[in-house]
Each structure stands twice: as structure tokens, then as C-alpha cells.
Image 1 (cartoon, rainbow, N blue to C red):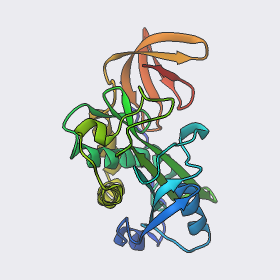
Image 2 (image 1 turned 90 degrees about the horizontal axis):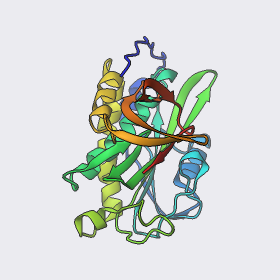
Image 3 (image 1 turned 60 degrees about the vertical axis):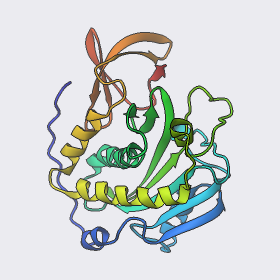
Image 4 (image 1 turned 30 degrees about the vertical axis):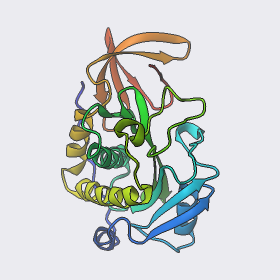
Length: 267
């Protein structure tokens, strides 16, 4: 894997102190039904009704959002559907993938307390058990005047659902893995603790570098051969890792660099 050395300078912003002191998950809002927790959180932020740390949990999303414009389907009351508002004004805009890694690691932290093995993070930030998806993350950023001010981190985890329309062989839930039933809202509150820990790690001087190292330690298919499709071409690559900008690094003769959305995994 190539090493990339870029010195990022943090933004200077007096909001840093208040952001650090507010615990993620405070306040915690339970919504019975919403179009999307990410949309709702962004509306609350833009209306100045919510700030850093606010968490929004929903039993049901009518228009759940996934990566690349995809919908996130979920049975009512069965899963973890959570969005949190993060003040990232003290971070350099170049650390967006480090934030993504932090959110993914917090999600991994939560599920790893119940799942002893085979739990990984599939690039860029899906949570996988074996070759099946247990959770997904969508981060939407607010950038003002070239400064990265806020991020809305939306996290969906399959908890008690056991039937997944059209993707039965690709999705898996915590119940299917462990045979137990869980309370999604309690798991969401526990996730907020993990998110708070990882957010504070990100704010440390060497936080982004440590997070990337920990991300690579649990990266799906790292140093393994996989089939990747780009356009109409499918080839076998060895997964090397991910650079600090979020590009996938994979070798097939020479090392290739892929941006998210340009390559499809053949699993």
C-alpha cells in the first residue's frame, strides 16, 4: 500500500470548545415515523433547532437514504435508524474520510460486542458479517465559505429484521447472527457513546492517522483477492487498503486507485 503524507491544518473556530463538551446523543429524540432521519436532522440544524451532539432515532423511515442515491429499506420498529449532528468546524476539510472511518469504527465497536468474529468494514463504510451487509452509513456534509462546518451522520443497522426483500442473500441482521432479539433504541443510545468516543479520538492531533490504522485492521477483504468491475471490465485484484482521501487501493499487476461509486464488487 502506498503511503500518503499530507499535512492538514485544522480550521480555527471558537465553537470547538462547546462542540467537544457536548456528548453525542444529547439530546436524544425518538421519532415514531419520519421521511429520513438525515433529512430531519439537517432541517433541525438549518432551522437552528439542534446543534452538535443531537441524535434522532426513528422506528420507521418512509424515504430512508443510502449511498449513491439508493433507498434504505427497513421494517418498522425492527432496526436501528439513527442520525447525529456533528460539529466538524475544527477539522480540515481533507479529513472527511477520517470522519467516515470514525463513524464506521463506532458502528463496528457496537456490533463487535455482540458478534465475536467475521465482522468487518467494507469500503467505504458498510458493516459486514462474512459477505453480508449488517449496516450502512451515509454522511452528508455542510460546507460554508470553504469551511467544513457540520456533518450529519446517518447509520442504519439490521437488528431484528429477518426478511430482506430482494436482497436476502446480501443482508443479515444481528438477530440472524446471534439468535437473540434486541431493543433497537437501547442499541442506538449505546452507539452514541461509541460515536462520542471516536469523535473525540478524531479531534486528537494524531487522531486521523490512528483511526485509519484501526480502520485498516478490520477492512473487508484486505490483502485478499476479489473481483471488481469497472465499466464493462471485471478483473481480479488484491485489496491493498484505502488512502486518506477515501480511495480504494487495489493491485492487478500494478496498483489501481478507485473513487467511491466507480467500482462494483462481485461477491
